[in-house]
Length: 302
Length: 244
Image 1 (cartoon, rainbow over the protein chains, first blue to last red):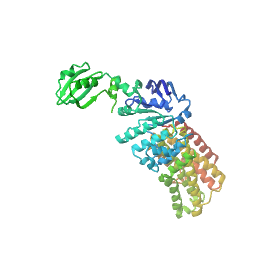
Image 2 (image 1 turned 120 degrees about the horizontal axis):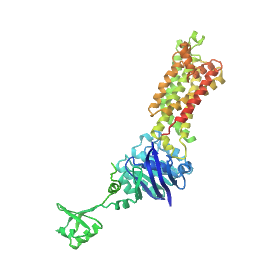
Image 3 (image 1 turned 90 degrees about the horizontal axis):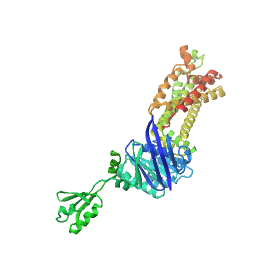
Image 4 (image 1 turned 90 degrees about the vertical axis):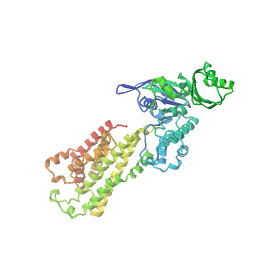
């Protein structure tokens, strides 16, 4: 079931289109990523979906609601975690949860929610005293406290250390498993690749491609490279003769075989035939980075 | 709404500086300076009144109110805007306007409490009379208080940053308090300063407090200036307020 449908969305700032003809759909229960470099229009796109900004043209439907017309109904079914939105420094964690729970008709049990984001022990701590990761987890808990059907999470792991980032990913995965559809704005390739079922690549306000991470990577016509140490002597010609192989180079005791198609299968079969096993085998394929580069001609920094 | 009020009230109490300047400072000044002999002598310029009779308590009450309205409240509101507290709240079914209302209400309640404590302690400790024209006093207090808070909302609306808000408030506060007779009674001022003061906000409020404290009806012109300030500043604030 489609829960979000965006058609030809346009948003202008000072006459310049920051979102230019964006169309996309999000299915129920998926983690949908909006990926692109800073300033690509990702945040503005989801803000139009969440009804925080008025669009200039196009249509948006979220669970059958129009964000610009059905403001209050939309907010009771969509939880939003904003990029840089905070709470008063001196509010305590439990007060924030209790307060935000009171904004909704059918709130989640906020004590359980705090426990799930791992902040049960911090309930009496003031917001200003929390670490970046804890603030982020509280922010996620607040986005979920209204029992939303859709959660929009913007740059959720920016500024977190690698451990906190992985913990947050795990949390998001669990939330999705409970049936909440998630729209995740990110400029982290790894985050998009690990978490998202489908991705919209956005650049300069336009959708470049929408596909699964694997599907996007597969669009890249890049040579794969296999790297291994042969267990015994092997004539290069054996590999060069394979139609999938385009090049073989030697570096010390290691062979670098590049090619296309089902390279790994062809090479393995040839090695087995000659009684050689590949030691320290590594396969290097295209990444989402390569896909973005191929599709837009630029890389996502950083 | 009651939960927002509770939380905002708790947050207010966690900023001791606000209470210190709005409540304690005027009180300490009133009781401290008020017990000096100089403040207890009849002053011919005040028509034989003592400074402590009506001038000083009115000015201290004004000091407490203007501190809340011009610095404490705008600082909080501008911080809420700048740090994204208002924006965060606007993603929920509850409108962020509720937060402004709660802040305004809390500051008004503190203003009323501070003024009551000031009046009662002045009466109990220094034997300062209670306002002798209570109805006129109440009307002046409500209208004047509303005019100060309307100006405070306007300050919060036009502050480009959170840090600028109390700064703008302070810069406006001192000349307005001066012309209201905070340091030199208006009776001792050149005629032209008095006339200018009559048509600025704040001074008519101080004047109305003093008049009604002394038992006179408030000057209708003062009430009109206060009401006009509420409408103009309040309207401008509503128009200019930015949510982010």
